[in-house]
Amino acid sequence: MEWRYFPTSLNPADIVSRGALPNELIVDELWAHGPPFLLGPQDEWPVAVPAERPTLELRAKVLLIQSPYVIIAASKYANSFSSLQRVFAYVHKFCHRIRHKGITAGDIKSGTQLLLRLVQRVHFWDDIRSLQNGKEISSSSVLATSSPFLDKFGLLRVDGRLKNSPLDFDSRHPIILPRSHPVTLAIIVDFHERNLHTGPRALLALIRSQYWPIGGRKTVTKALHKFIRCFRSKPRLLEHIMADLPEQRVNGCQVFGVSGVDFCGPFHYKPEVRNKAPVKCYVSVFICFATKAVHLELVKDLSTTAFLQALKRFICIRRKPQHIWSDNATNLVGARNELSELRRLFISDDCVHRMAFYSSSISALRRTLGSGSQNCQASFLPGCGVLNSWSRWKEEYLSLLQQRSKWLKSGPALAVNDVVLVKDENLPPKKWPLGIIVELVSGRDGVARVAVIRTSSGTTKRAVSKLFLLPLKDEVGSQAQLGGECRDKQQPPPNL
Image (spheres, rainbow, N blue to C red):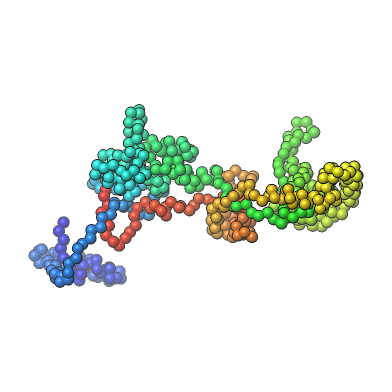
């Protein structure tokens, strides 16, 4: 290739680089036809001005040698292995000046080999250079246990111990893939989709028939955890460290003085009418915060009326609680709005009658039990030995609540604008709605266990235990780029 001098005043490219309007370019002869000296003989062409010899002291030149690098940077096809195969099929055709139209299966195979060779030379360059020089790789290398060798295309393959097996060449000597590289993850996802979302163990066996990803099952499992479709079918629960017990749980009070209420079910029972379908029913569970005593009431449905009737029966038997804690269920919210109804049932004649009967029964039982060892049992009845019972409660029971039985450490912290799945017990996981976190509500210990989320139906509050963070953040992609990065410094030409 012969280089010639080109004066700046006669260079058409400089017109655009210095800035020119379209109407100026239309009438510019230099832009339209080029420099006029090109029409004359070459001896009349401009001659380069010889550079003056430097008079300063010459210093030693430093030659910087770098390992080969991948030629594509931040490719939009990095997440699709089939797209990368087609792209590099065209690269292979261009490098070898293959002129047939379209791409064939041979072009895709050669392009795939070119792609994987470039990836290997980025991550395993020291091992490749050792093998090219006829040396053994370092014992500290991640490939030391694989006994790698270079095939005729320059690809690193596992030598292994299966040379005498009936497997084909690719299965006996799979191509080595780096750990957590975008191309490796793209290959894992491609095999996962083509094999109908199989599990990690079976997927790894299928991949190893052609490729050998470093890290094995851990690499495959990590890639599948970022697969949104599989995550939605089996989401992972977010956990935070178990919170401190509230004051109502660690301070003594009468049994069911501070109670919590929830529903369980549905249960089915067979009605008395023959050949009639089973009928649903539910159980209202009242739990004492201080003693963990449980009171069960059967309810016919989840309506507010059914709950009020169950609450009335509970009060008639267990006395009126000072506080009742519940979740944000619809029937409980409706009960909270009917405060007048609650006041009436507290002073109803039926309730007073049952409470009087209950108190007289306790008094008779206390007289029957007498003294001695039976006083210990009587001390736990309402109105009997209060000081003795609560001292034993503090000494023997309260200390058992000191340790955390589960949720020993916090999981990944949520942040505003994170996309989450909202758990709905009445729907399968794949139909759970998506939401965006708008606000996090922190407790006294600074841990956010409640989040304000925005869904398609509006804004609501949900416990963090009901949310599942979608794996949208690609932690691997920020560490391992598919290609290099554009730099101003001169780089060595890519070794194709």
